[in-house]
Image 1: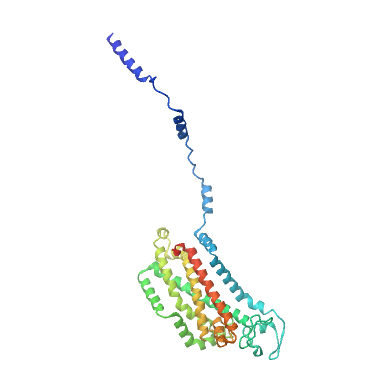
Image 2 (image 1 turned 120 degrees about the horizontal axis):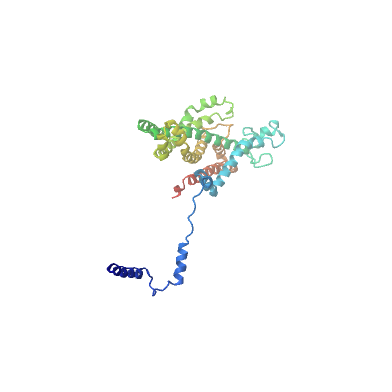
Length: 376
């Protein structure tokens, strides 16, 4: 009896604990709706498949495409590029086309002269000096009766060839010296740095004038025997190019060396070195491709100085010699007639200014495109 008596109070207590309180009120309907909205959370996004990830990587533009896209947005640089392309096409394809325009000219001095002769840059018609633009001579003639348009196209060709030759030497020597000094360091860096400092000690234009003035006459006769150069006053073309190239490559070497010092500390270079790649492979596969942006920008900006240097040397009479043609030589020949025939000096001066400004604007556009932080 005592056990049953004890069990009944405990069961009563348990029933009272489990039994809900009838006095509690249900929650409002607003809280129930809010709780239902929270519990129905949107499902988590499923991870992308491998094909979709590869597709997104393909669509992502590369750094080169991003740079080209920024360059296309620069209207000034694109206009300058179009102007440069126009001058290059005129310089290379203009003379052969121009020499086939026109009939035979009955010259009182030289007899029948075909268009291929009187539209050449070296033919002289002394009885037709200092003429204005006409149907036969589109830009007139100079003080010796030579076609100004033909000489202008030859002058542009000379400027472009000199600039191309100088930049080839500039890029090759600058890359070799700069990469070796920046990548290996040590005594190689010290030796090459002192050598470039020695080259910087020579004023560029003054060194070119000294070189062409000392060995110019002999080199002109020797180089005139080359079939590409020819005897028509262009013998000093290679000499001027060499003189200018010697003075410009140390600056390119410094640019390349500084960039190489940064690149060789990058993680992808360390990974290539850890994987067993040789120094030569790292230089050609990883260092040099990442230097192309700064090389292109520096060489484009340097073309303007090269063209000005060539024109200055020819203006002083140390570059291309008559009957050859150069923009600087045309300006020099027309200077005495600036008051009586200003057209003869205005044409080459304007073309020279347009070429220099176009390359300068294009170089600025390339620099801003490949390095947007340079604007800051």
